[in-house]
Image (cartoon, rainbow, N blue to C red; front, side, top):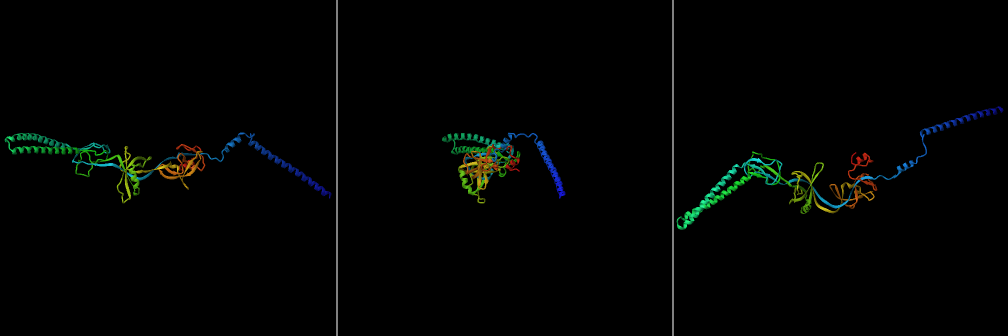
Length: 425
């Protein structure tokens, strides 16, 4: 029993010793761990001191305005009160105001051409000269014949006077007196015939100089110097002249527009003549000047013409154009740029800018879009501002920053966003 007790004591002492060793080892490990950690902190944050008073300010600035989006850059326009033109549009063709085929009235040989192809000539300008030597000789012969007859007439009249004086004394007979009278009358008739022949020859001479019948532009020549031309050849035109100042533009519209055309004709309505093609379309103004007297039963259309001054000859015969005839002006409309009107589920809308530079979509009643202008009858008021570019960035209540048209996007606008807004990428 005593030996067992001593064994328990020996074992207990050994256990206690081992326990104390293990505890000291744990403290060593924990201390080492703490030391390593402190060394790491001292190495990583060697200069860490008290918190800087500027840090809270920087954090505050970064978080300042949180939840408020920046103002969206847009361009804007002001709604204006105006009259809306009711336009009747149709394709048209330019035609000369007058077209003359220049021909010769007499036979002859061309000895001179007094213009160049394509020249602008005035009425009565000389175009051609034909050989006139024979006609001039005939004129000289006719003048000589008249002079001879006039001399003979003076002699016959003197003879008649003498015989009338002698008839009372019975020196000459009645037959002789009658003969003298007939001689005078015959010479007078011969002189009249000679004068008529002379006028005919002079007319022939005038015909040998061919003049411009109208003011206009010449076409290509069909006869050159030295060519023989004949007056009986009705189909042979020496040159064609087109009058281009003023000029006609012919177009056709459905017969249902006849009433509108007639009202436009009565009011001398204006028309825009648009020349397509090129980077910039040219527009010339004209006035309606003609409505045909019947409807084409085959096509169901009626022909009308617009006259334009065409001072700079922008319009050329045969040119295809677009005619926009203003047949009526509708009063009390509102006008905005067409870019300000957009389609939406509820119809056509525009973004209206309020006094606080915040936007709201508003449904509008679009009467018509003419060119780059949209005419509205309801939805906005004159003087209000509407967004014309940059709508893609907007939401109801968004703040906007109105910029001048054509300005570059803000520096903070991503390039991909700019490409998307411009329809690229």
